[in-house]
Amino acid sequence: MNMIMFMLISTLTISMMLTLLNFWLTKINPDLEKLSPYECGFDPLGSARLPFSIRFFLVAILFLLFDLEIALLLPLPWATQLEHPATTLIWASTIILLLTLGLIYEWTQGGLEWAE
Image 1: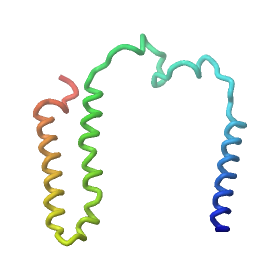
Image 2 (image 1 turned 45 degrees about the horizontal axis):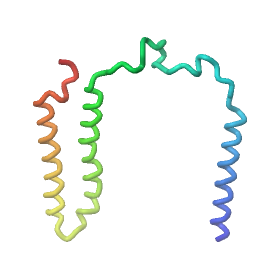
Image 3 (image 1 turned 30 degrees about the vertical axis):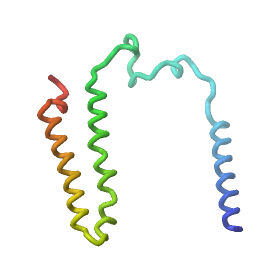
Image 4 (image 1 turned 180 degrees about the vertical axis):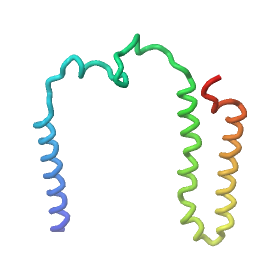
């Protein structure tokens, strides 16, 4: 219990010291340049409310869809220690096959083409 209290108190102390140091050292006088919207180093051109290509959203959705394979295949090293590792191999192969078929479908439909 003594060690836990020491770690808790030291963690809180260091956190509070760093937070106070941050507030003390920062410059809190905003000027016109700091308050302007950031546009990758360029001066803003036109309104920020202009619509842009739906391809940005499509690429993001495709990335999220195909990124799920990491989450689904992550437990495989532990699943090979089960009674029937062949079942694990079948399920993993099925997931990879479905994702590959989805990628081929998106490719043939032109979902991965950025310029038309």
